[in-house]
Image 1 (cartoon, rainbow, N blue to C red):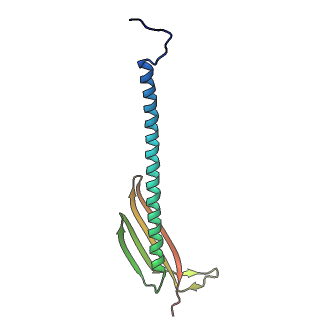
Image 2 (cartoon, rainbow, N blue to C red):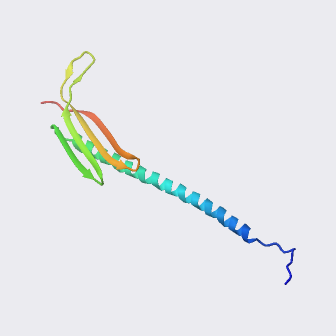
Image 3 (cartoon, one colour):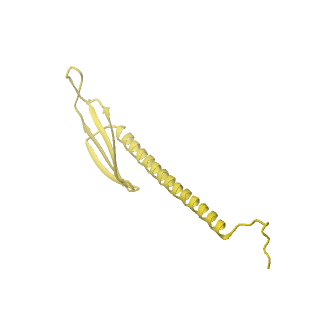
Length: 128
């Protein structure tokens, strides 16, 4: 059997090296994709929590107010809503009545550890 030395072909070593390079590149792409998906999931979760906090603040801000503290759990997130009177003074130390502190807190566990977000605002209701 005679070999033609002018004919060029890939050796087994060259083929194995090419497969190894492609496998390494594919692995890098898979890791990058996994990281991107984790970030997208975290962003989606934070958007859900943000919407939950906004909805609870909005519901509590409408209508007559009374002191309240309620807890509920939705989709693995614990929400605590609170409303209580707050004393507010102006620049000359005059007490302004009728203000309420409305607060909503969300607590959940993410892959990075426990998370807590709190949002609050003041609402004015006349005492009459």
